[in-house]
Length: 308
Length: 292
Image (cartoon, rainbow over all chains, first blue to last red; front, side):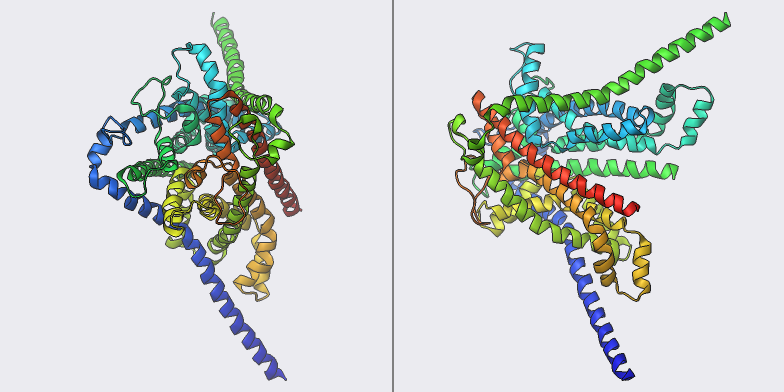
C-alpha cells in the first residue's frame, strides 16, 4: 500500500517536472518574439532600402538639398525632409519644455498632494488623445488663429508652426512626468538645508531642485524630441506635403514620417526605387530615434544612481 | 539704512515668490485649458452631425450622407484580433521574464530590447507590417489580419511592461507560501501569481488596446483604403478604421467634411473614454484589495 502511494507520488513528480519544462520553453519562445521584432525591423529596413542605395549613394541621400523622388528629374536629397521634421519637432519641444517644466515644478514643489492627484491625471489625458484629433485641432483651430495673428497672406494653410504647437501640447505630459520624477528624486535634506537658511519656495525650486534634477530634465527633453520626430498624423494633416528646406515656420513643409505615409498609401509599384525611398527614409528615422532614446535612457539611469 | 535695504529685498523676494508661483501654475492651467478648448471645439463642430444615421451609414462623396459604419466595424474587428494576438504573447512574456528566467545577460537584453521597441515610431511598425505581413505573408493583400498583427507588434511592449508590473505587485510572501507547500514554479504561477495579477494585467491591456484604436499611421499604410462601403466579414477582408476615416475626412477641402470628421472624433473619443474608465475601475478595485 505504502509502496503504491510512493509510486504514484513519483509519477506525479515526473509529470510535474515535464510540464514545468514544457511551459518554461513555451514562455521563453514568446519572450523571443520581442527580439525578433527588433531584428525584423532592422532586416526589413536594410533589405528593402537596398534597391534605393544601389541607385543612389548614401552620400547623395544624406547631403542633397532637393527631394523630388516622384517627379522628373528626380532628386534624392533627404535634407528637406530632415529639416521639416526638426523644424516641427523643435517648436514642439520648446512648447513642451516650457509648459512641462513649469508644470513639473508646480506639481512637485508647490501643489498640495490632493491638488496634485487631481491635476496630474487631467494633464495626462493630453497624452492619450489620438494624434488624428490633434491634427484636426491644428488644422481647423490653431491655423485660423495663426492666420489672424500673422496675417492671412503670411501663413500658408498647411504650416510647420501649427503642427509644432499642437504637438508640443501632446508631448507636454511626457516632459512634465519625467521632469517631476527627477525632481521628486532630489533628497528632502537638500531642500530642508535651503529652507533652514531662509530660502523661499521659488529659490529652493530654481536654485536647489532644478539644478539637482537637471539631468532628468535634459533626458525628458531628448525623449520628447525623439517622440516628436516620430510623430506622424499631426504633421501629415497640418504641416503639408511640400519638401521644403526652410527655417520659416509659417511655410509648408514635409516631415520624414509624412513622406513615408504619403508614398506607402499611394500606387507606387512594389520593388521600385521610389518604393525603396520610404524604407531609406524609415531607416534614417529609426536610427535617429534609436540614438535619442538611448541617450535619454542613459542620462536617466545616471541621475538615478547619484541619489541612491 | 541696512534695515530698509533688508526689508526691500524681502519684499522683492516675496513678490518674486508670488509671481513665479502663478507662472508655474499657469503652465498647468494652459495645458488643461488647451485640452478643454480642444474638446469644446470638437463638440461644437461635430455634435450637430452626430445622429443615428451617421452611425449606421457608409461613407459617401456627399458629406451630409456620410456615416461611419464601415470604420466602426473595422475598428471592432481590428481590436478583437489585436487582443487575441497580444494577450497570450504579452502575458506569457511577462511571466517568463518575472518568474521563470534566471536574471542575467539574456534577460537584460530582452528587457532593454522591449523598452527600445516602446520608443520606435509607429510609422516604422507600418513599414514592417507592409513588408512582412502585406507583401510577404499575404502576397499584397491589405487585409485585417495584417493590420491587427502590425498593431500587435506596436502595443506588445506596453502590454509586456504593464503585465510585468502587475506580476511584481504580487507579494512574494504569497509565492513563498506556495513554494513551501512543495509547488512547482508553474503551479505557483498558475494558482497564486496569475489570479492576483490578472486585474492589473487587464487594465494595462485595455489601455494598450485603446492606444491601438487611436493609431492611424500604421493602419493608413497597411489598409490604404480611403472610401470603404462595406463591413468586413472575414479576417481576410479589406478594411478601414475610425482614425483613418477621420483623417480622410479632415483631408477633404470642403468645410462640411471637416464637421463630419469632428463627429467621427466624438465617436472615437467616447470609445476611448469608455475603455479608459473600465481600465481605471479595474485598477482601483484591485488596488483596494491588495491594500487590505
